[in-house]
Amino acid sequence: MSKNILICGVGGQGTVLAAKVISQAAISNGEKVLSAETIGMAQRGGSVVSHVRIGDDVYSPLIPEAQADIIIAFEAAEAVRNLSYLKENGMIIVNKKVVQPVTASLTGKAFSEDTMISSLQARSSNVICVDTDKACLELGSSKVVNILLLGAACRTGIINTQAVEAAIKLLVKADFYELNIKALHYGE
Image 1 (tube, helix red, strand yellow):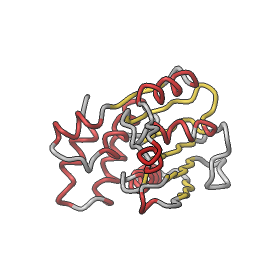
Image 2 (cartoon, helix red, strand yellow; image 1 turned 60 degrees about the vertical axis):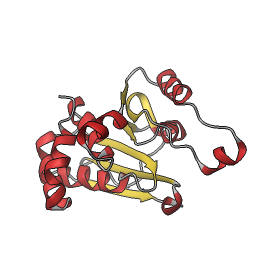
Image 3 (cartoon, one colour; image 1 turned 90 degrees about the horizontal axis):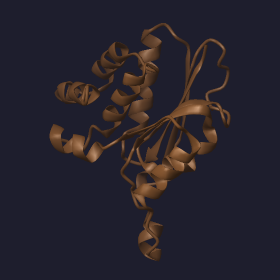
C-alpha cells in the first residue's frame, strides 16, 4: 500500500527539510521512496511544494491530482492552493497561520486565517490545525514549525515517530537535535 504525502508552504519555512526527514524515515523502514520539489520563487517567499511517495507501487515522484493521502501545510493559504491534490477523505495538517503574500499588502486584500481554514474544512472532515506560533513561543524558537507539523502527522499514524526521530538525528545539526525532538513531541 502506498502513501502520498504533499508538503506545501512558502520559501524559508523548512518544507524541503520536512520532505527529506519523511523520506529518510521511510528509507530507514526499508520502504521505497520517490520525492520531488517544486520550488519556484522560494527565495522570495514564493510557493514550495514537496511530493513524497512511499510504497512499492509508486513509479513517479509527483503525486497525481486527487491522490494525496495527506497534505502537510506550513501555511493555510498554500493548503487551499493545493487542495486539488487531496484524495477524497484525505487528511490535512495545517499551520493555522496565514503568510500574507506581497501582492496582498500592495493591494490591501489580505487573506483571512478563518476563511482559509473554513475552505479546508469544507473540503475535508479530517483537518488538524496546529497553532505553531504558540508552540514556537513555548519552545523558544520559530525554526521548528516544520518539525511541529511532522509531529502532528506522526500522531495520526501515517508516519512512524521513531523513524522520524532517527531521520532528524541524521539530517539536523547536532546543536539543534534536542530542540527538534521536543518540537516533534510537542502536545503529546
